[in-house]
Length: 83
Length: 328
Image (cartoon, rainbow over all chains, first blue to last red; front, side, top):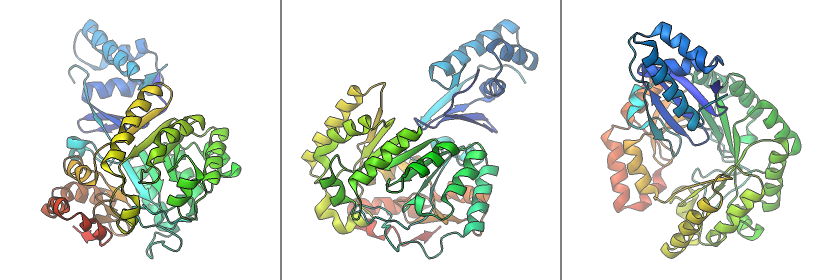
């Protein structure tokens, strides 16, 4: 998984921003969402991303996995992430 | 760090801008629109920048200064930049500037009149990896296009677009409506699609720049605009999923009022709040990107900016003073 061709990510104090430059839409991310995107940038698979998030965040692995998968699915639907 | 729900909010950027209400929280701009020169081979009737042959600004950045600005933009991690003009392809360091930006991972759009899109130049643009080239195509025939774009040539522009597509460069088309080309909007959208464009942009032509002097020749009637926007709405549906048709129906005054709430910026040598405003919030020869960004945030809150916009509502001719710059 990786950022889509026309998507740029930048870290900010509040988390980060995703900028889809074709539609010129900006998505402001909270810190947790930014962490998910940061893990996606090196090209990890979804399961690998979730494993890394589980080691970094407090909470049950199930909750983290559920939330992260939902978020990743949403980013895919918006064509911000691609395989 | 505890796990909170991953969340985001979205904001559309309808023109070069920061992020609406969150812009003050950003560490640098997300989009920089850079008018790299005011020199142009054409002298278009509606040009907001009053560009033309021999119209380069006397104090345009030299090569060292250009790359100093680019260096700061890259260090600031500005993800999206556009080069416009004037005609940006006339700038002596045009391709070197593109190479500098694209090699460092920012996305770059070129806004051109399309008269220098030779096969070699298009191949270079493709090789360097520009995000898109936006070409102004103000008409679907040489009669209207050439009337609007003084010294311009419709066939040359269309051929340039074909060369871009042959080289694999994404193409966007921009169309400015006037009294004498507005009836061609449907044909212009069709032509853009036939030429392989991925996006088509339009909106009301602004009463500023050269248009102030030529308005009686240019200004479409309300009825013309009604038909124009009806056609564009239909074209959105017709080309859904194949080409993005995008336009704004608001005029200059509404645009400026919107920008009071959703700031935008234009970079020349000086940094203006917006090309349709005279206010300058920084000078890259003297100020760092961080200082200009800070000034930019404050600039939009300066009462002189809001006053200027409101004065426009009673005196539209005030747009003729947009190039008499006011330092905030």
